[in-house]
Length: 117
Image 1 (cartoon, rainbow, N blue to C red):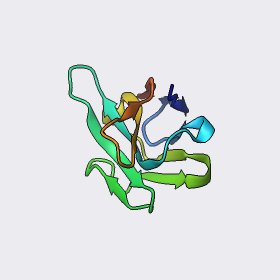
Image 2 (cartoon, rainbow, N blue to C red):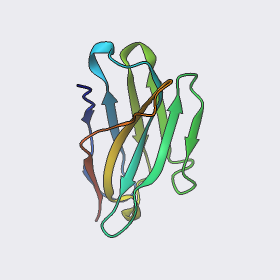
Image 3 (cartoon, rainbow, N blue to C red):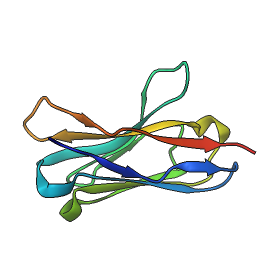
Image 4 (cartoon, rainbow, N blue to C red):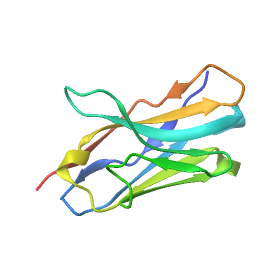
């Protein structure tokens, strides 16, 4: 069974920073894309950022220039550095993993990010 190990998140004041991590231990997947989606209460889940095996990155317009996604292919891990956080970034953040040559996709359990003064 595939498990995604997430860490990071928490509470921060506006303008602060947080770092999220996501790892797929055990080398059980041949991973194409890793990334994060987020969902605030009453809204649909939306893409925040994703990164491919070849380190091609995509960001939501709302986080461009503030968030940076990176990846360690040797560890099957990805990281999301979130700077200049705003109250509107408050949401549950879910790690997402898409393997090569598969219609399957995998989600982490989610981690809460709260930005408030």
